[in-house]
Length: 368
Image 1: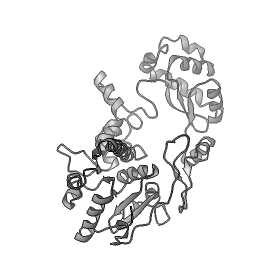
Image 2 (image 1 turned 90 degrees about the vertical axis):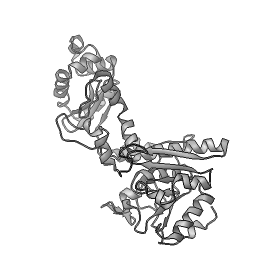
Image 3 (image 1 turned 60 degrees about the horizontal axis):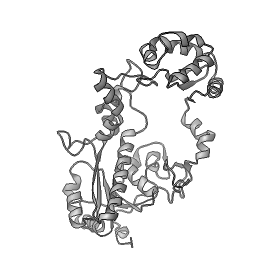
Image 4 (image 1 turned 180 degrees about the vertical axis):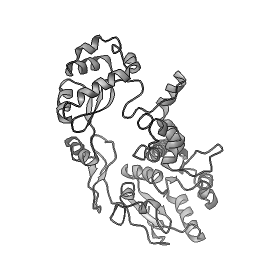
């Protein structure tokens, strides 16, 4: 049962539904807020909603009505294996849909809280959204060009990451339940997820005492490891060790750089990045992305063109992976689960659902 809205809860529910779970999405009478996050809209809801809610059934309930709330409580106790909730802090407790209440009646239940600032601390009762957590966690302090304004990572990495952790926690406790017969409680939060993504930067700060800085397309601790403008676009070059740097120098007809004492090791290249990167920039501007990709690949240097969404979707590699899947009942193809089992990606069963008829409790009386 998904008591979810926006991104984190629905993404967790979609992961589980792709893995084969039957997911009942409980929505307020006006529906999940994400239904209205547009344009663009397709098949009666926003494209954002469509990307997060396939393979589910929707029921619309007004949980302020005692009969509808009681019906949902009874359904969870009698039928549900797991509950996912990312409602505003305190709301499930007010409704008697919290873990203690439901697991007190059904100890086998696995319950997952997807919170904002976490289950404890002075901010535990505050709501939160992805950009707030990217700001609070420090992500925005390391994203963008040096000296530039705060920049949000485009994909909702905090929301979707939190949903992913929630789904992993649920699967883990279901596996434990198979042995013990007892469920359990999973707690994940947007803030913990965001801090988790900052793990490398936290380690670097604690080791050096220096605040991590913005590196544009680059990476702290490795040079060259960033995008370079070409004659018609951009190409990312990842020369992550001395062997790869040597190949790059020879490919660029600058074997003389190998004898430069400032560039003979990665730590020295990091120290002298302000000297090396402009030299590389001058080289890459001279040819097109296609030319550089051919030369870099021939030299065995990890590289990639900077593509837009249309280019990525049209690329032969994307098509070969068949990660963009046809979904029965959907007007657009949707990105599937990014993993396979025995070589096969889970196949979508149904399109994201239309909102259930308000007060229609028939889904709670079906044979589950």
